[in-house]
Image (cartoon, rainbow, N blue to C red; front, side, top):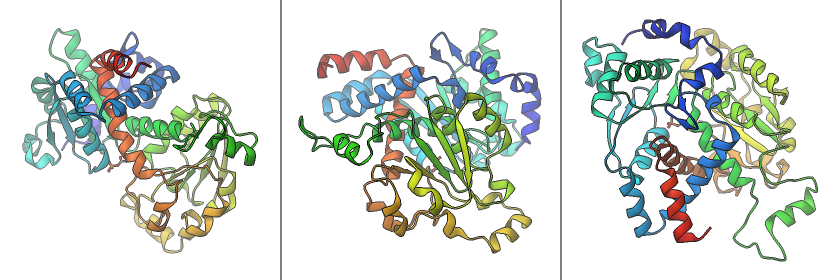
Amino acid sequence: MLPASDFTEQYESRINRPVLAKAADFQRQERLTHVIFAQQFDREMLDHLCSTASMIRQISRHRQGQDFLSGLLSHKRAMLYFTQASTRTFLSFMAACQILGMTCNEIRDPTTSSEFKGESPLDSMRMFSSYFDVVIMRSNMAKFAESCAYLMNELEAQGRRSVPVVNAGSGADEHPTQALLDIYTIQRSFEFTSQKDNARNSRFDQLRRRYPDLNKGLANKTYGFCGDVGRGRTVRSLTTLLALWEGVKFKFIYPDYDKLAPYQDMLARLEETGVHIEHAHSLPEVIDQLDMLYMTRIQHEHDTEADQQFFETFDATQFTLSTDLLPKMKEYCPILHPFPRNHEIPFDIDSDPRAMYFRQARNGMWIRAALLAHLFDVDGKIGAHYQKNYGV
Ligand code: CP
């Protein structure tokens, strides 16, 4: 496979523009044409996607609803081009396509495609766009998805066939659709509802007795990110979105080692938005202050020999959510993790009602279906169907 520089060079001047100038290239009026980075989403669009995801979830409960949804995009085909390992993102995109009736095909191992014979990734991309209506892609090469989106825009400008590109994880830089499912999960958690709620008493009322300042929604909360904050693309994308809410605070909890610390470009970008940022090197010391805890694994696959030496004496307990920490956490604090996990969340935690990570992964299917519906302009039909059948 060609090194990243061979294709990013071609689009270098576009890649190096300010992010808002780039975002304009990936949408037409209010509708996204490609999904490349988290800064493309504003609060209004996030609310719209979360609301569409909830409608799809509800409509899917009945056979008639499933038939309606699967008729929406049955004339469309998706290519899942995942040359970097994935379980959740790959499967939830595939399930999302199936919910909307799309046919899927996949390339996961580039040695089975003509890239093995030296075909350039950009040529592969153009071939996919000849056969499919959307390319959903994961790559270990930063900026590859962005470069593919520019290629598609060039083709469109020449009057040639062009399809939406969806970044399902690109190198160390971005994982925008993971951030969407994280936001959706946090939003649902901070509704503070329970099936036992009634007019006289609700879960929110009960929580307010213990936490009088608690408010519903994502604003005015303290969000903790624990583990390999530096090398994790999910934290980069999620913090970008959370910074859209007022009064949010971020606590980055990571080993005192440069590579695992939040990168300066991310900190600078977040500071510009006015969010309050704190740093810590021990989860037990700050866990009681958090309204949400986002755990991440240490990404040892990126370790150098020097890193391995550091980890020989590393105290993992400071970045592990052990069961003895659970009583110290706020009663409502959702625990998220993009997964896969290693040992930072032991299996014993899974039965705690605050453990959201399996629900979070399932939410990926609903929000990705909502995103595809948005890209293909059928979200309005979903809203109309919901209104007609559920009267809301
Ligand atoms: N969260 C996530 O991206 O998981 P996968 O690597 O399994 O897709």
